[in-house]
Length: 352
Image (tube, rainbow, N blue to C red):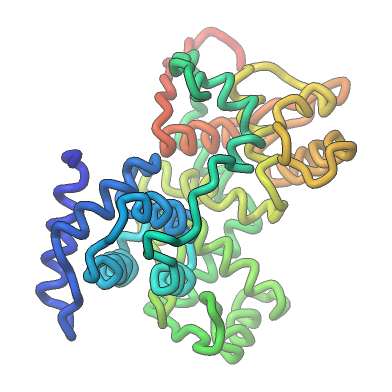
């Protein structure tokens, strides 16, 4: 058991001691669960998605007969993360709990698939990082980040993120979520009121709510929405808060299917060079786009959206490079995945 798991287990035990009614919680079960979660590549015990539930369950099934108390402990862990605000992903709490309730834990359940479509799609990136099987991680060159004040200013100037932040302020102190859905959504009357407050169409509110949740500007429990940690950090003018919220919400703001935007940004960041759409196609592995013959078109579409969101800059002759915010996004997400991204200090007399 790693040192990181011990505080997480202790916090859950403390929470369970005060919860009413008392949940099923066996410390040995929780240690097993979080240990397998860590073995699956998780870098934070609070970072869970529905896909993680199925991957962890598949590894648990390989152990044979499991304790009868395991599912109850897993549900208690899920409730602890959601109700105490420790869930690190933007996953729907309702969907996450439903996945834990339903996942097959019997020894004769589904066998874990050896192939991962996302791993194949990210193959070129994993090769570059040295994270393919049999490889050693490759040290990355240091990059010079833009000043935090500049990043925060540019993030705050993003219209979509700004409106999501206004929505987060509007939900304070909390709003009851719609009970009829399997995911988190505002009630119909609150959607109407939020649209009026934001001077937006009602059908835009759901999108802004998703952006706010991804940014950490809004967090949800099973029944309520409330301002999230990013909203308080931004309101308190914590340096880097707006830039971090922008980076966490970029995928939701882009609203493009698949991993192409991330793969394109990662290639631009790691190469340190401007690239044309044709050159960026090679960064997308098998399955990254639905139709391989349309790969360049998908890359161009992603670049257009990323330019609008200030993640990428178009320069001469149809080439693109990452912006300061784009660099921040890639560095933040690589670090979250356990990749060391060294930082170099700027040289004052060198031009940008």
